[in-house]
Every structure is written in C-alpha cells, then in structure tokens.
Amino acid sequence: MNFLITYLFLSIGVLMAQDEFNTNVSINSAVVIRSRSMSVDFWTPERMKAAKEPVVILPPNGKNTSRSLSISNNGPQATILGRTPAATSPLGRALNVRGRYVATTGRVFWSCTANIMSYCSASVIASTSGDVIVTAGHCVYDTSTLQWLTSCNWIFVPAYYNGTAPYGKWPAREVTALTSWTQSSPNYNYDVGFVALSLLNGRHITEITGSQSVGFNYPRNQPTYSFGYPLNLDQGEILQVCSGIPGASKYTTNSYAGQGLSNCYMTGGCSGGPWLQQFDESTGIGVTYSVNSFTYSLAPNTINGPVFDSNIQSLWNYITAR
Image (cartoon, rainbow, N blue to C red; front, side, top):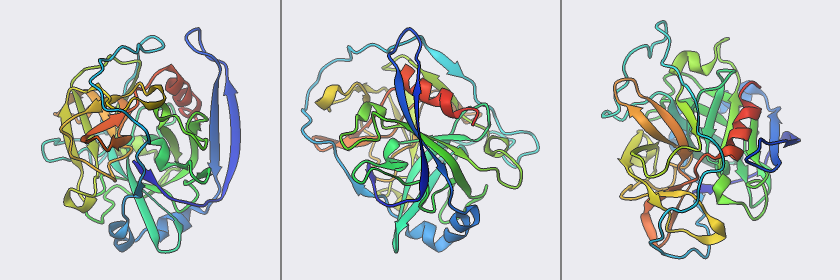
C-alpha cells in the first residue's frame, strides 16, 4: 500500500536456477551496513508513535470485475513449520487472537528523510537461521526511487503496542526481493520482501516470539486471517485482525494473480501484515501464504495480497539460512 525514500546499502544480484516448474529467478539483495545502535536508538517511543503509513500508492488502470480464480499455482505445495515460543520465553504461553495479540506480528519502521517517519506491518516466519521476517516488497524497497529502505534506520518491533517495544527493536542485516518487484514498473504479484534480522542480546527472534509457518503454492479460497497495524483503526497503535475467505482480486491489470479479502476495513499501515491459513487461536500459529499488499479504488474495503508461489519460495530459500 505505500512508501518513502533514500538509503545506504551494498547491493547483491543473484540469479538462481529454478526447479522444473519455473524459469530462472532473479533475486535482488542488500546487506545493511548502517550502525545497529544508530537505528535502534533513533526509534524512541515518541518517534514510533509519530510514524505514519507512507503515501498510499494505488496500482493504476485496474478494472472492476467479478472474474473467478483460474490461475493455477506454479509448483507443488510446500510447508515449512513454525514454532511456538520456548518455555523460557516470556511468550511461552497461548496467544490471544481475540485480544488481537499475536507476538509474531509487529511494525517495521524507517526514516530516510529528516522529520519523515514511516511504518508498515511484518511477521516472523519459519527459517533455518531463526532470524527472518516477511513484509510487503514496498516496505523494503521504494520502486519510485529504486532504493532500499532498510538502511534508513529500519527496524522491526514485534508485538508493537502503543509506542512500546515489549520484545525489543530488531535491526535488519540483509534484505531480499525479486527483481520483478525492484524495478520502476513493479509486478504486484511479487510485492514481497524477506528480511534477516540481527541478533538481540545474542538471541534469535524466533527464540523470543516463535514463528509462523510459511506455505508456498497453497490452495486459494481458504479461510484466512489477516493481521496488521492500519492507521485508520486505533491510529495504527494496536494490532488488528480481519478474517474471511478470499476471492479473485478485482484488480486485473498486468495479469495480477493475487487474491482479494473483502470486508476488511484496514487501510495504510497494514501493508506487509501476514495472511494466515490454518490459524490456531490457542497457539497463535498458522501458515503464512500471502501479505497485505494494496487496496484498489473501486473496491476500497478489499485488501489484495500476492499468493506465495514457487518464485517466492526461491526467494525464501535464498534468505532462510543467511
């Protein structure tokens, strides 16, 4: 749904050979070289509360349609299981979704320009390293300036609540997105970014918050929970959730193959929040298979999200152990 500007980074381009279901996939990655303490210290409670969702960018030239889902996934279904918090973690207990509290979801913050502070939503997901989060591509890369945002005092705050960071502030150390997104005419089927976080006090984030499972080529039209921090509800200070069964997106420009979750009244700020299937309200764990991406002017109460296909799986394969 959104974004802003400038940066300091080391860019790495990777071309990965794919399995039998795909052609080669081009991956763009950046190692974050900004001081960790600079990013963490910048985000005081006052600045976190002052951050606003970036300028809403709606994809142009869509058409309102009631088309049915006909685009198939491009590989076999795959699931990487998440984990509940360890018993020694302060979160080693059931999480209450009805109280809108799922510790794996939080806010990402960045500030590339003086006095302009921005945020999106993101979630901790399963990874080999125990350090990976997923968010929207536009929350890590600005396609209008072709710049990474992760070196602009960019941090992740899991379980963010009203200016507080109950489980710490986690800087990025590496970020990746498909080159289908990191170009001046981005493909919204790939509005996805994965970020490997730095350790905090010698611990991986999944040791503290647990992690959501992640699924690729998952079936469509399945019961789904969407989480995020939209500015239009509680000023974006409290985690929100909506649920339903997604249908075909009403946005059809550029062969968009994502889904639309209707009657979901979250707006800017929820971008990057996870879409979960098979969500267990007693544990707070489900399978992440999409993220909040954008709304469309002809259907403002429908949130659209890309479906994690085998190309996005290749992106996860790249970042999972880094």
